[in-house]
Length: 386
Image (tube, rainbow, N blue to C red; front, side, top):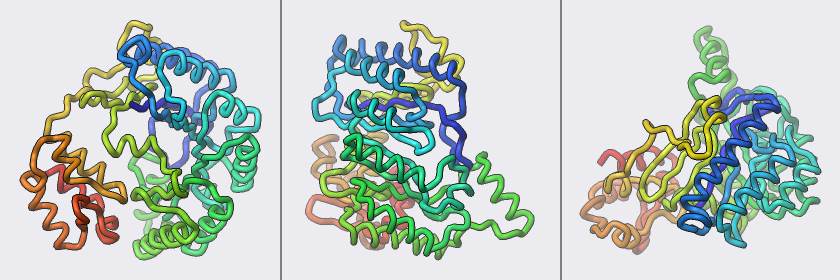
């Protein structure tokens, strides 16, 4: 089992972000942490040392900006998790970190309290590009935090990068990639910008489009060239692409994310956090006020957001999550898990994708081809709909 901790606060919401997050004052953050500690105890009594005592393989602090927490709050949350759950000695414990909300004192507190992996949100090494998407930091501030993290003993660091940003060019994105690989982070997540409706960036781009003005975004051909360049530069520098948007040095794949993709049980704690336990999918309440006011004995779940997965749901998840991985899915693994012949359930749709050059079969494994990765959403959705 793995644990996700949601910290829904940030200094300033980025212009492209549609996650459940917002700025908050110190008092609100402290009240939230108190309620989060109660929720950790609530789940601990069910799945932790006082309940089923399931082993915890990974913990991931996401947001928002988890590094907005102060030293005492980080220590309190980690101590509560250790008290309530059986955390494996080799557990991967990640905290997302924004260069604008961390310093050496805070990084040392993370390290001393058992956090052993950082995920630093850079996005771009070009300060104008960072400003254009509303990031609160500069590339120089990222370099400082990365260097300090190494000084504090972090030997497993991820760097988040984004392509297809406003006014980003092929050459400026190449410069970002080349600068980052010289730092040798153990993991790089490289995403293409998705314009989410309701965000300031979406509204800005829409306004430019309506006025017939250039919106600054790379065109489809430029975006595609950036996509291929990412793979080329990272693989040339020793990074293996183990998932559609994720690259790592050998043995540094993100174990937490892989747990999702192979359908391990996970507990989500914090505002709006999702869980899936014993094939029941759940979400926490979305009201910050309600979350803060909940008492220890009350459920944190949104009753309207609970769903028992059907056999068809579970099989579809096996396919569209597993196909995210470069290694793909195992037909024998499918048959062992569901007790059904793979070809009977998915044979025809899989064969069509193979004939179209989107999937390839190697023994019992089926995975996306390079062409298939380009249209992965089409391939994956076909298993949901069939």
